[in-house]
Image (cartoon, rainbow, N blue to C red; front, side, top):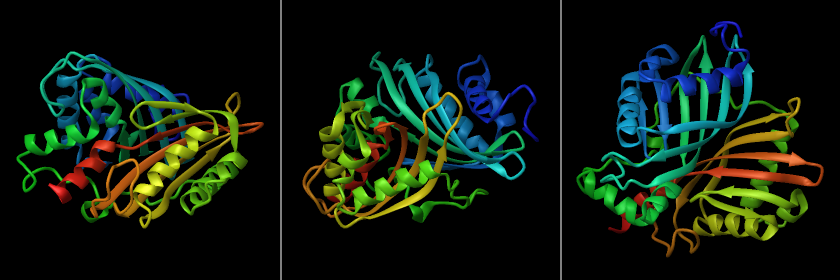
Length: 323
């Protein structure tokens, strides 16, 4: 691990280790000065943050709202080298109690469990580029709201449609130091091909490539199994945006010792909300959806699929169009 602190045995150890140090240890926020570059670019579906000071402010605000938050690393799927930089796709289960007032409104006291996937570029012991998706739909449902209702409340809290924070889109993006596309490993290629075929009306690929006993973890904290649940999710998503362009932004495949072959794919949907599906009646809103998916493969096909995107950010874009 040239350029990285020698206490970390490998790149997954580094990613899990700094996550714990920053967000769970006492006074850990100070570690952001050590582990995040001063000019880091962090993109989330709800906004973009430029610079470490903005990341620190957002982290402190989150900890005031969820002081007992834990970030339990499920997997790190990665590519690259220490010399040229490495990209990690880090899947996390977060647990937290909503104990403080903040971006989620007045404290509810509700205990939450939700999934996060963060794609981070690291070199010389620092993160300098990040794409972060949280299942905020699951979070707000556990607090007692629907993602649509929460999006309306958020717009009001932020000063109304003319003043609220605009969700992330390419028009407000800023270039970061990482412009790689991952690797060409067969498992990343395979999963990208599956997603491309699904998004091009090839839903039959699910019964060809998924394990009949597959486990599916989808937005809003939904767990499903087998073909019908996968077909229902993907058809519901695509039918909401039938004319939107689907693009693979980044893909990684890996086959590591004691792990199933697996893939991490970051993808986008960009276009009009012109169909009936997961997001209600067509609104005509121009939307941008950032999704990150992880997949694990076994002897009978794709056996686990994890998908994270922020439904509240989608509803916010729809409501800003429709009022």
